[in-house]
Amino acid sequence: MPRLWDISPPLHSGSPVFPGDAPYAQAWNARIGPGCPVNVATLTLSPHAGAHADAPLHYDDAGAAIGDVGLAPYLGRCRLIHAIGCGPLVEWTHLEHALAGLPPRLLVRTYARQPTGWDPQLPAFAAQTVERLADLGVVLIGIDSASIDPADSKSLDSHQVIRRRGLRVLENLRLDDVPEGDYELIALPLKLVQADASPVRAVLRELTEKP
Image 1 (cartoon, rainbow, N blue to C red):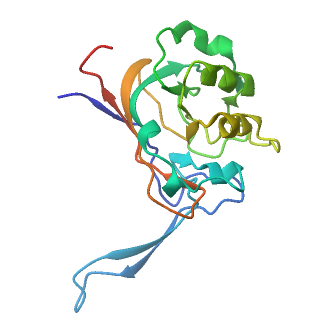
Image 2: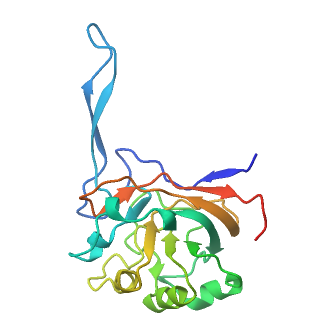
Image 3: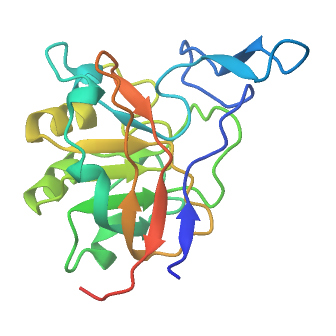
């Protein structure tokens, strides 16, 4: 049976979120007891908590909500490339050792171990790197940090590239211990028809057939 790698970080009340975002919170609306046969929770969270897919609406006021975005980019062959310790930006030089025959989805691991708290110095993509990946036919990029742009960026250059080039993005993936190589990606967003992002349960599945 093909091996699965769960690349979603745990999502709980202590999970880090971007400063200013709503943290994960849970309250019990009903508990099992006399006259009540079920437990029912109420959740409050930013749609950018944990592993998540940004919608065009996140970085474009006229962009589509995540529930209106096609699912095809989030399902299929992808490549994981290690750029561990790359510094503040993932540059082309960090990836070029593994770009031959690149499939249309690319994930980049920048941390040896994903932090358990907020990282204000989070690694991000250089906008020129995203542009060149789009030139190669990439339709989705993903990263193990909280954003494809630096945490203090106001221009969001990499987000503006994916807006202009029509790419999709996954952020805050947990890629610890996953070897570099090709996999099948499964990371479907929820059909939230008004939201600017959606949590995903992202997994990588071992390929059973060679390209």
